[in-house]
Length: 251
Image 1 (cartoon, one colour):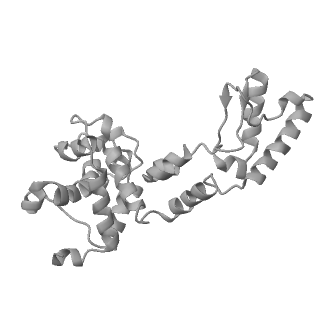
Image 2 (cartoon, one colour):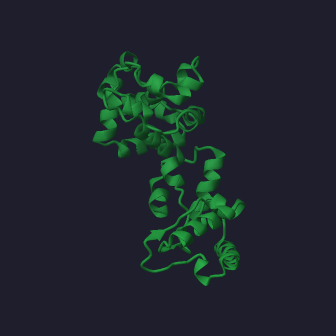
Image 3 (cartoon, rainbow, N blue to C red):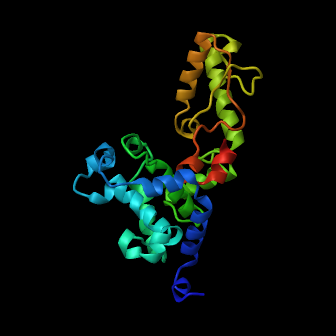
């Protein structure tokens, strides 16, 4: 084993290995197409909010991912790393720095991608980088907590099924009393419904009145709708964190 590889952390090795497996035509095209023209910079709301910090520029953020690609998967970076500004990740500290960029300085809104004349998909690059870090457990604590709840319980607020169903039950009781009509109750797992209403788990946990408001609208509009006893969380932290396995499970 080369001496340099002996000093690379286990997580850094896994990130590099996983990057190699993730590369496809779309990613490689975005990794090599940037000409650093700067047109993406003015379109980024992070840059507008932090005009004196160049580390918020989309091209700079993408370069932190691009330099790893150049060092390990592009022959120019392996032969002439100093020429193409190839870089590396070797330690936990390097991964933490990358985490701050891909999670803390980009929302994947794609404004930069829309304004890029070369068609570089910055948002996809950023999400892939998030996924690489998430795969080795490097992510913001809040993201880790809600992702765990969404994986294990089925929603990002950790609301248990009995609590969810009980809340819908007393909301239905209130609606039935308000309209003096059993049809005003919140339908659950109704077959052949035209609308399946999913919610943000914060609603059921912190402010169920928003669900009642939606139910009133559906009732007064005569809509054929339902809520589900399973899969009612409309959020998907797998999509946010780049965890494709969680994203697919939630969907």
